[in-house]
Amino acid sequence: MSKPLIAKTAAVPSPSPRAASAQPGVGSVPAAALAPPSPSAPGSAWSRTTPIVRSDPARRALAAEFRAVLARGVHGLCFSPYAPGQQPGSQVSEAQIRQRLSVIRPHTGWVRSFSCTDGHEQTPRIAHELGLKTL
Image: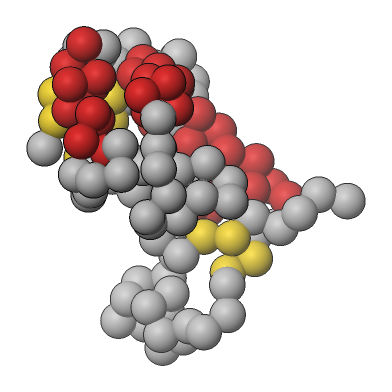
């Protein structure tokens, strides 16, 4: 049995200059199958204290929509190079930053980082070397 998919919010992608065009037929999932309840509705996603558990068909639809968004690309992503077991204050290496930026590079044109110490000061330079813009 597969793990339940948990969703609290929906992402709205922006076009990316690096983005490839989406495959035909992908992204035609009914919005009702993907969207959480309206924030103003009683028991909405914003007032819940428990996760939303989706049915298998809804999980497949959501996964297909996510793949379509990823194929189209997003304008920018918040970037953190931490590996499992690391946390703020852990030293990050140039190789670790470069490897993690290489993973997201095909899917976005911008990255935003939140630190400038413990190795993170290298992020803007490495991102620019890989053709990404930074904030």
